[in-house]
Image (tube, rainbow, N blue to C red):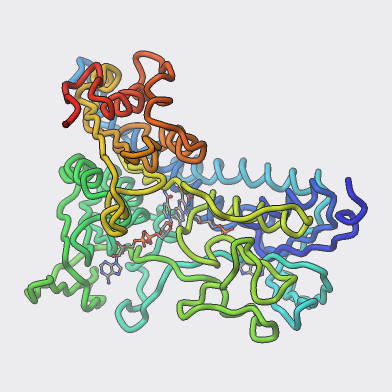
Length: 475
Ligand code: FAD
Ligand code: NAI
């Protein structure tokens, strides 16, 4: 370990997947590290109020859905009974297990943890409001800001009411409302919608854009939408919420479609999932040269250095995509840079996964982006109806999609919709990052019967020789 690194005094502000990954690596490299975060153990939004509790609930929802479908394959279960207290305890237990783990890893690495909220007094000093209401001052040589994001709130549109909740409220699972409106058809909306509809709520979704999950290719989203539509009461696209009001025992919501048509509906609860906003406002950034853009995202260079040379920023607070693994990777880049190593944040593929049922996953270049950028690509779609594994699972509602550069044969992007898509996308990430050619994928033996074969076969489609679909190469 270099003596130079040993002397580095680093503070990380925020203990989410960006902040704790950065703090852990910095300690592993030998830096003297302090982590400032209000929670008992590291975890941030992802572990306490995001990725992890939502996936625990989605796991249970899938179990219920599968038990309800099983009669089609000759196994009939009784109607499931849900014990909400036990379900909540299971979810909380999952969070506790993981955050106890991060707490232990923090101690093993001898990282100094101050529980509180930090703000900058200047470019080398922080003032910390600790959770036991004390004020501490901390000097540092380097800082990494990893304060994350919070749900967007529009006070002029969304009144204060216990019937109107955000993702944090939805994850508390206080009750199963008879009817629920999900405002915003993005990933959070559809993941939580899956949970509540399976548990018995009549869920409607309103999305102002023409399609759900903006960012993903429409052909993938169409398959997802077709599969989930029967579970929802209504999916309203091209429609905006223009007013909300608490009335007796309900929330009255006024809608306006793209064509100007207006109508009202009442719901027991409304879940607002219209995006997230960065936590940069109360950090005292004006006492430094750290700059933010018009939406409050901290501006950084490719190494995640801000306009203040010794202050870095990572994760949700620097912008999209707001994903845990992107935050962690940025944290590593910032720490490597501080350590004097050659590092930059320049991925070719940041995978995104919607843990709906079926799952939706994509990485690298999408077909939509290729069109927008005028980039010539060839697109290959392998329908899961032709996959032996998908048929054995009775889940042919899936598709594997490859975006290939026709000249170089390089894999530029991959998209998947179907059961387990989130696990499969990593092969796409590796292929894209390693500049894999369609012939490499085609010639790599994939196990049978697995869904992963659809990746190999979609590469075979490039050559017009996929075994299980007949698509001769176009001349
Ligand atoms: P965060 O996780 O937001 O952590 C920031 C931490 O900083 C918090 O602990 C906060 O208390 C602390 N903090 C804030 N201000 C201060 C301050 N002044 N001083 C000290 N500490 C401060 N992403 C995925 O990749 N996969 C998923 O499946 C997924 N599911 C999600 C589900 C939901 C419901 C939600 C809401 C989000 C989900 N996300 C998911 C997004 C993911 O949670 C975020 O991208 C990720 O948590 C961002 O990490 P971060 O380190 O930037 O910040
Ligand atoms: P989002 O940006 O993904 O989706 C919000 C949706 O709301 C958009 O489709 C938008 O058009 C719509 N919308 C905005 N205003 C509206 C209005 N007034 N009326 C109707 N629709 C409106 O944001 P979301 O779902 O809140 O998630 C935030 C971020 O959290 C995501 O961008 C993602 O990065 C992260 N996340 C990731 C998950 C994962 O990886 N599985 C799961 C959950 C969240």
